[in-house]
Length: 462
Image 1 (cartoon, rainbow, N blue to C red):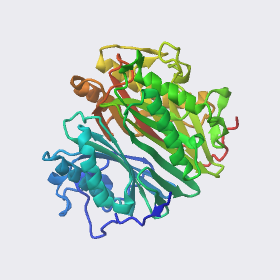
Image 2 (cartoon, rainbow, N blue to C red):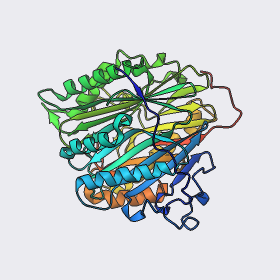
Image 3 (cartoon, helix red, strand yellow):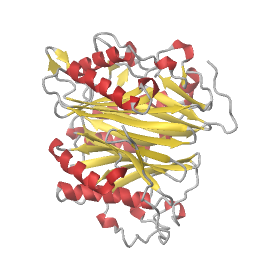
Image 4 (cartoon, rainbow, N blue to C red):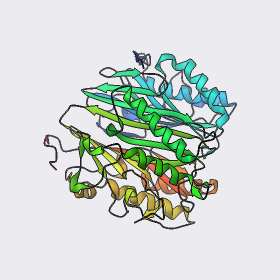
């Protein structure tokens, strides 16, 4: 598989003297300084003039977080078109909004990965053609998942971009993008979308993991290097021959992971001998397809470590009793990465579960509260200390973005109200999705970025 390395064309226009108030970021994480051109700390009252070439009325609803660390900038964007019109109009509106955000970052940016939440699976080919026409050889890894946006639009997009002054971005075809910076290689991979055909859920899942492993091998990586996995399974709670499809996915994942020694990853810490698995989201979609993606990294740097986290208030998923799945789900509640003096924590799909049981059945508000409580306890400094990293931790304020999967349309406003009260201003996408248990009404995933004490160079020794 050949790679194409692109010099990005999304460069700042230095004649720009104001930031459009519509594009002010929700959060700055890690670095406190804002490098946006003349943005006066992005206060709408200090930047009242919109860019002439980007009228606010033409921009989709957007929220984004800027991240500054190791001399580079990353941007996490959540974009939902609000101008109405045809599906094509909504795609162009979303793409124009992303372009406008990136142009105001003050340095060249490249889009690396985007997840497109669709109301109708039949719209995916049209969207793909528009993306390919615009991005050309700079096409980010693009996932299409049938999760109708709760607000009623035809699509919503979560996109990640990175500055390229010191970064090399490699585009290796439709299912693989690599990012290299300061001795670390990040790998964004997908097995694409698999239709069910005549295959069972187990066969489909087994093929997906095999395919994803082959994609990783094209850049000399394997599942041992994977920190985060996403599994979008059609009709996740539907039964086949009396067995739930999600349980068959878990059986296939367990069988595939039997040949993967995650402990052999040279970056992995394993305090107290607990199991090591990637963080993961397994969420239902419409139809019967299966979309998979993962994030892996490789480096020889000695100040880079990975730690899988479990929640003290929840049974580890891989220890679930057989009543939930014949072969338990093999994932960690979160995966943390320390690089120098900063910490990234990928939070798996989290729901209203205490120990191994669903709590607050039928009550969307209390389930959302419990889910956020679970996330808060999972990433808290006390839990990191319990796992052996006494200097690490995060809070809900360190979240760069969240996805909120809502099972019932009537619960959307309730879930959103709880999240906005608990999380404040944060990039978020709310999408209709089938959660993996019939009695779970909401699931939330996210990623947090937090600082470690400066000058601490010693890695915890286990």
